[in-house]
Image (cartoon, rainbow, N blue to C red; front, side, top):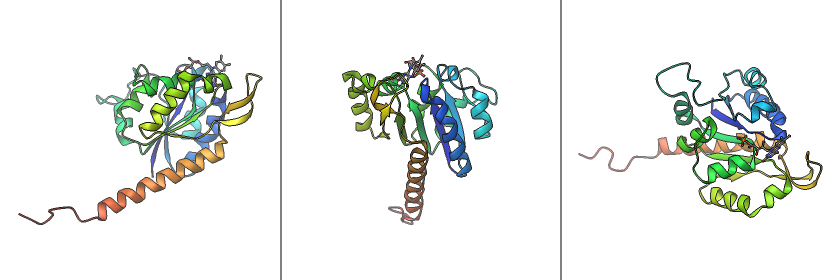
Length: 197
Ligand SMILES: Cc1cc2nc3c(=O)[nH]c(=O)nc-3n(C[C@H](O)[C@H](O)[C@H](O)COP(=O)(O)O)c2cc1C
């Protein structure tokens, strides 16, 4: 079973992340949803808690279980950090190493691969600031899915729609499989100097 952190941010497309959480859970993954405060204005944490069958993190100070900060424990054990939908704001924060909430703190602390599915107004997506932020994240190995073209919730037509949820779930599954193949190959490979005194 793979541990997936699903980051949900304050986009109108946050409602589509409920379907994504459900698909990932049904695929057998251990899904932990981390919402920004603004995301909770679009969908309730209870929706994600029910669909993911796990408690939802909405704040960095809601430690309930142990002395070990929950967001660090989650960051450590994640096999994938998937942010869908990702706002222009969260992309900017990730690109600049800002960690002022649970999601961005986890992102900064986690060695897990980062998969980002943006959703925003087309002008936000094509703004030079966003272009620079995306390029920066890509240069650090983050993978982007979309955005897609179409009619946007803001009324404009263009690039900015969240990628199809089914395709995001499929791509997440593919990445998780790839990372487990890499791990098992590394475990099988003979270690250098093994057996030497
Ligand atoms: C109705 C509504 C829809 C929004 N949709 C988006 C969106 O799709 N993408 C985006 O980048 N920002 C969107 N915003 C603006 C973000 O909510 C805002 O930038 C916020 O600061 C993002 O916070 P977060 O990144 O911490 O979740 C929307 C705001 C409103 C009121």
